[in-house]
Length: 221
Ligand code: DX5
Ligand code: ZN
Image (cartoon, rainbow, N blue to C red; front, side, top):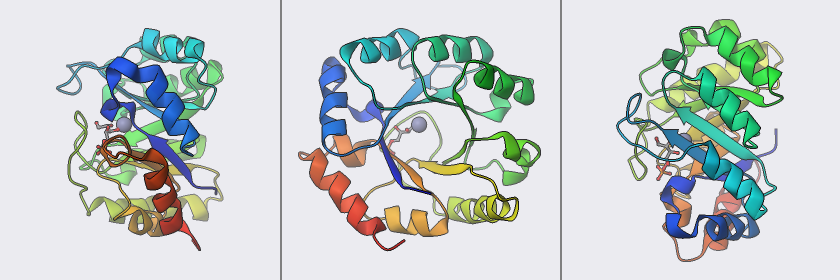
């Protein structure tokens, strides 16, 4: 599985969002991580589908990885698919009918992902693991950027990776929260292949330097 680096626009200069996406992609990032917060499922409020559509109109052609931290999820799945999302992920605790919500994402032609909060066990998604294109592990509590990586999540990643290999699945493993040059290798060694980084990239003066340093850390894996 190839490695993907997905900068989270939560940490971007939001007054210049289109340019920030252009810059980070030109710096070598693979996709845009788009954090949707509703001040209900999580205690913060961010962007809706209009902003996703605006990025497409601006000219962003890279995959957009929509991370829904909202409850309920189904209406927004449809709106974000129509707005140009590629991956759509949601937290299983936020949908009454997880299988139905996954099928809705599929029916809209998007890639399906579920998100596990730090305290949520891998067993929660085991029955639907075979359906997923990606499994996202929160390594901080969702709601804010710039938090410290919770190392106990690495054990859950190892467990999920073993299941994915055992079942011969194509499912990606994404990690979100507190990921940077200092720990990306450790996270990859646990089994992750897709890395969200907000403050580590947008907090730097040179995005290309950080993306390159991350890829150097991943060399040989
Ligand atoms: C948190 C978000 C993350 C966040 C990551 O709820 O899902 O994507 O922006 O930010 P950093 O990389 O700064 O921890
Ligand atoms: Zn996220």
